[in-house]
Length: 93
Image (cartoon, rainbow, N blue to C red):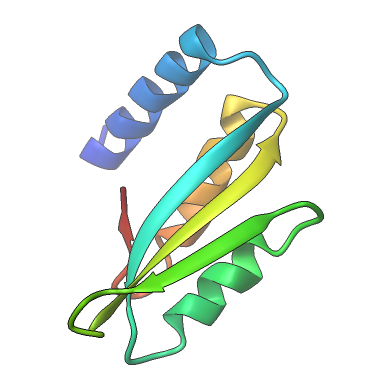
C-alpha cells in the first residue's frame, strides 16, 4: 500500500468519525500562479453551490484557493482530492 493510499484510508476514517453527512466541506489548495492551475481547480469544483475564493500570495508566485462545497460522503470528499492531485504543482492543505 502506498503512502497516498494509507493517507486516504486514514482521512476517510477520521471524516466518518467526526462528520455528519451531508456537510459543507472546505477544501484549501495552493497552486502556482504562472499557469492555468487556478482555472483547473475552479473547473474541477465548479458544481452547483460551490463557493470558490482565491487570494494571491504576497510575492504573486502562488494563489490560495478555498472551496466550500456540500458533500454527501467521505468517499465523495476523497474523490475530489484524488482528482485535484492531477493538477500540476497543486498543494493540498
